[in-house]
Amino acid sequence: MSNVEVYAPLVNGSVFPYHETGESCKYLVDRILGDDLRPPAKSLVLKIITDSGKTVILNIPNDHSAATVRIDGEII
Image (cartoon, rainbow, N blue to C red):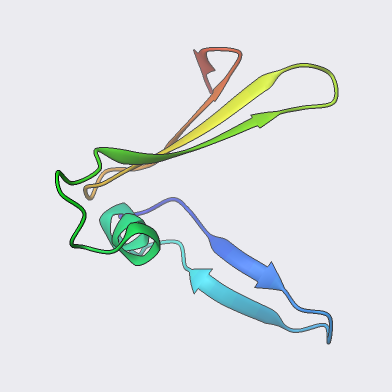
C-alpha cells in the first residue's frame, strides 16, 4: 500500500487527485512511466534541493512497498 498522495490544486479552487494514499506505489510508477518501459524502472525518484541547501529525495518503489524520504542522506 502506498503512503504517497499526488494531487494538483487547480486555479478554480478544486483539486485533481492523481494518486491517492493506499493505492500501490507500483500503480503510480506505471501511471507516470507507462508499463512498457524495458527494462522496467526499479523506482521513481524525486530530488529537491531546498533554499537552505538540503537535499530531499523521495523514492517511490516500483512495487507494493512504501515510499521513503531522505534528507541529506538520512532516512526520515
